[in-house]
Image (cartoon, rainbow over all chains, first blue to last red; front, side, top):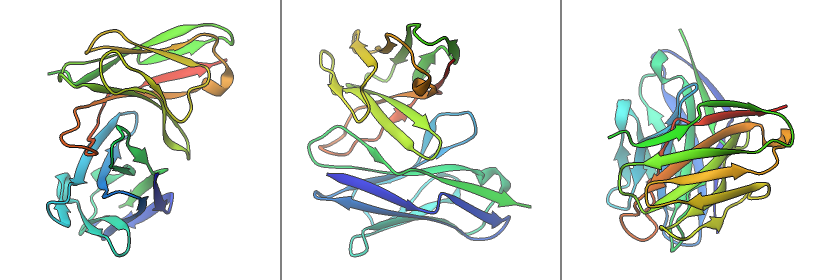
Length: 113
Length: 115
């Protein structure tokens, strides 16, 4: 069984500040991990994914995430927030023989001017 | 490539009415999925189809049926709509690159209100 916990349903930062969105996972098999972004009234778009090739993963729009097996974490960061980063972010895990993605409940990021 | 398309974008139903949500993908993906999204609940899997000709229940299948019409199309049917089915519905597709690596591509969603 797999599960994802996103700490903080709402994160607020100032423009130019560091963005840190937390994700912890549970998996009985080697996990593949994803971050998706959802802008208002749109579908989900892939930001980045961990496929075991490298523990530090770079994605689109300046985001990156680091896979830490010892902490079962895959936190998303961006050094400097931009107003256009305001959206909801979802962490997800897949792995093993099943065909499913398991999503966290999401974190809404607000960027203040 | 259009990716994953969904129709309609918006729908209002009365309790007890039926409707079918349509989804199509042009990426030649084997697997397709239906999710619902409710505030504070994330995305919950309703049904999925690992390959053409197969369908399986997800986390919240009650009140829904699906049809994998062909490799491209996967529809979701509400036989007798209830207010609890008011939600945003997303279709997704994937072609697992290796076992367990399941990057999914999402459609724009259907906003359904049941009165």
